Image (cartoon, rainbow over all chains, first blue to last red):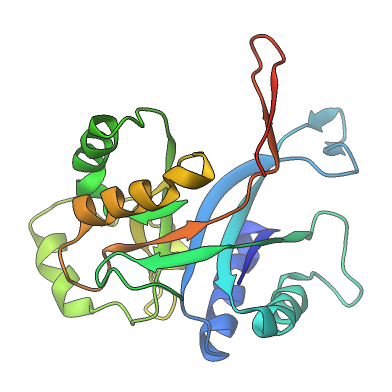
Length: 108
Length: 123
């Protein structure tokens, strides 16, 4: 199992969520986050924005579904044809175990 | 890492403190599970004025991507305590209905204490 943490533009969340739902990945968690990337924030005129609001999506998927989910997020969270700075990052990390509270059963 | 119902935060905190794990990090989050959200069960709550949907941003209120507010609970424990903590969280949160939440176990490689820089490895 893998945890996929995707930090994406807030305006792209709805599209990514509906595309992943359509692809059979309904379970997810979303939270508001603030951060900056390698471009050290953005400068608009004289105003410097150090922390840019983003949305973080958490998905826990089986190993074999990782590429599908990453591809869908990447395709839908991108702006323009070739993408732009600030479109976000996707991180994956291993998950050792999962439990469902309502049944107490192990696994996804 | 656990995702639990908002109204179960206090019982979970108390239950964990009782078995010796008073420390945790938690935050608000929105999410959805495997099962589609039952709109009919939400409606009475909305009508009585409870602000269950006040966390929802306009785009998440679309029928398709409706997300439910949950509490995201993070707790770092030693390997041998994992089972105890999982059992405690399940016992405190179980209502038997879908939507009770999910627990994920992630490996932690090392930790540092900011106060004095002490490093701890967890393998």
